[in-house]
Image (cartoon, rainbow, N blue to C red; front, top):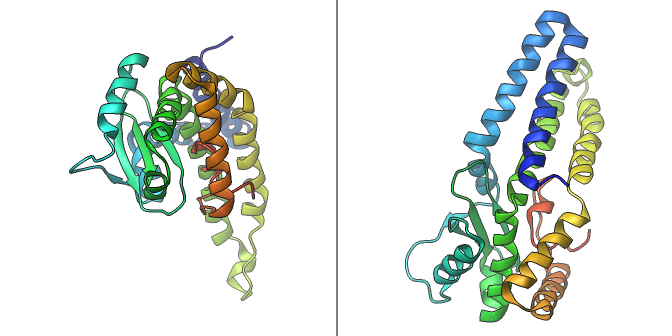
Length: 251
């Protein structure tokens, strides 16, 4: 079975080849050139602006100052056990109790916690959340999630751009969105097709072994599911799979 790191590179390579083949098929040499530009743009977006884009979507700010929860020490200890570099810690101002991680290429990954999570969980529950998210970073799941999110959102952005050029929108007050309607399900299918349940199950198994307690991890995941249903979080399209549990409460 391929490792997650290998899957990431295979997915990126297949996507770039897809751009080239589609461009050549639709537009010959000019289409091939446009396909190459799209492939270069995708890789640049992933490796140079991936984290910035996602963190800005959630208005995450880097943790500075005192650390009454001892989060940095816990992150360092767990990261050492997983043989990874400790990720940078970010805070999202939100009453919803949730967490997610972002990691692209060899750059330092980012771990994001909401203020609601810090207010509602005790020390042992916080440790379980940190372990679960750090395992995603270690397994390169966070990188995989980011690449699929960027690709899916890029398709939707292309749809929005083409809709602005749709001739009918220049003459009618009610705007039509034929391209976004066509490409949005495709973006959703990319995320659903690449990110499957087995990814989460394998990660949870690794995290449970890391903290030596299936029960503790299971209980905190169950509690976070309930908290998300009570106070869901609206997230941008194609980003819900980043989170420890569905932030929209199963909507």
